[in-house]
Length: 295
Image (cartoon, rainbow, N blue to C red; front, side, top):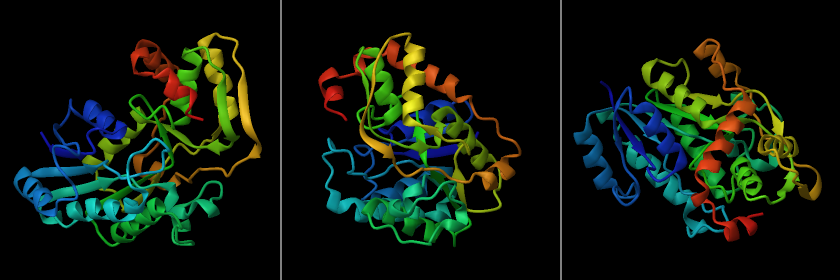
């Protein structure tokens, strides 16, 4: 049985990865309290002694959410230190998978269905996007490190105060109108599908080191809100704060689809229903006062 190290144990991506992959792999998962990824010596010792076939680096330092206590001035440095503290240990692991972001393309210059070769047309102006940009520059020159570039992912355990689909589900469950800052089309990927994709990258030898991981289909926030209201069976309002459409956030997925030979995504409405059902059975995780202040 292959042995995996998963970082970012408190995050929703890492939790999903650990749950899904546990049946097929020996999982070692660390959160920030158990292993400080900024401590170069500690990371080296864990990886050197671990004998990991793969490292799934899901930890990230993002101070964007307004309720975050992280220092926004440290986003670039901390993201890069965590990444390179692991990458420098490449002699002691089989491969490294990490999750890039469409922010690498620079938010100010997003266009629909961005392809992998759109990378480096612009240098991101924000610290988070710039950190992911630098990681990709490194991954492109390293045959053991793979960037699974994400656009919009959703699933249980995510931060429902800032993640739109979870936020909308929670509003509907508490009989509150669903609020949207500004409508936009995004390519949303269900976490269950991402876990299956990660398993493929662990078991196979990809031809490239950087891939857009997305469905190739976009959905707008307003239509998603209406879908959630339909699923809830309630009569709720959808309130949009700013008229007009924001930038589309989507990627061209033909490179990874060609590698996986016809990957079948979970139908979007089915994935939404599953998430709504999860929040319905875990109402205790929803803080009504924080939710009301979230948009």
